[in-house]
Length: 252
Length: 375
Image (cartoon, rainbow over all chains, first blue to last red; front, side):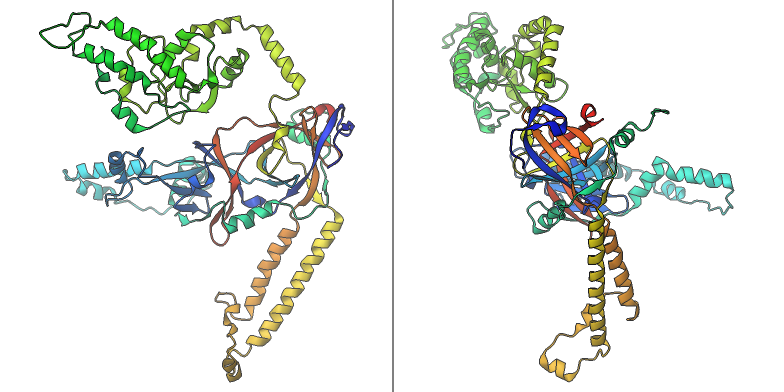
């Protein structure tokens, strides 16, 4: 920290005074693991413990996570009747709907994001790998609808027709180059990506909440260990070109 | 027809649900009782109900409403927190007293949903001296928006005590008048003031204490480690590798003879079979593969950036600048106000799947290149 009141000529502002100078550090130690989670439907003022899930799951390949947040079924605000009706979507055992499942959706980054820890008058930055939004999953409603449909179908004799549909013909063919291309496109289509996402099984995810020792150990990695300078290889015009995207053909 | 107030207070008091900051003054309904009991049992409004011997008192409908305006309003306003008192006179206050609010309406609350008042409303009302009385809090449910100018009896509200009360502001003529008066002149003046401040929110205040922040940069500059750091890391890496080698050799000597000797058993020493990593490869291969993976991750680690990149400067005027390296200068400002919850998490999918919650985000800051001073 420099003495306060120094004129800010170093920063091109001769009329202004410096009040504080905070050193900024960059570390990539856990950059690849950092995720910014947004909970668009939860107010910003909630305490960290309120979102602690009873269970957490992850699809490691696709990077999707799901968390079951317990609901307070004893609260006077909880509607038990409705809880019973919707609990059928969770299990047939007469369980009340006592969890809210939130599932993650990746948000494409439109800019560079870094997490910054301000501590002891120092700022430590770590790049953020992914931004994800967590929204409630309504699978339990699908299940409830399914069960109702199944219950009403028992009245009809539809089982025979259902079995017939499962008979498929299997053909063996040699793929031409065009067919290859078509196949590749089809594989990249949203529907097939979605299908593959659904087919990947959930693995259990161990959740270490904010007060735990493990989380404290990991968050200490957000602080840079070295105080030496990093050399900046980008000069102002290069930097601005990167930002602008080099749209002007003849800048020079 | 005021029907519902037959049992005005019991159900509502029982719920105890309070939205926003209002208390639940029950004085209002209390004052209803004497007027209503007479009227509801009477035949429809306006008729003389002094039918055969009943103790009914004739109270015309209009009378009831007048009471509603006078009696409840003072008790409501008296009990309500004066914080956001609107300087619009008794009529306004009475409306709010009577209004759908069931008395909870002493503060104007921001509405979520289609009638949401955004930041524009805040700035315009603040100019009018707090007339809007914005609390800026999002009511956590879908509030009913009521037009207090409509002269309806309040009893229909009793059926839904959970709906928070919403206030009017944009439906009120007084406010629309203000909007008409607001000219381009005023807008220009406001912009001038903001420019003079150099910032429209207190970015500088963020930088005190301990915070977890999200920074947004237009692009990531490239950095590299200084030569000394590279050398030092390489040296350390080699040291670690040698250390591992030494350890491995020592272990191999020990476990060549897997059978523990009688002497060892008697001495109670643990049998070191667990030291070997668990896989099916024959003993000779094990140290190599293990060593490879450790070396790989070690060399990856040694190229990770770690060090000082610049300085954050807080200036007296409130402006905040970020200087990166020798030449890059960025202006720092607070990001848009975020009403929802944001958390930072570290996710580890190598090995066991673990999620570590690192904290809630306190603020988001946006950096833009300071073109004036950078070029």
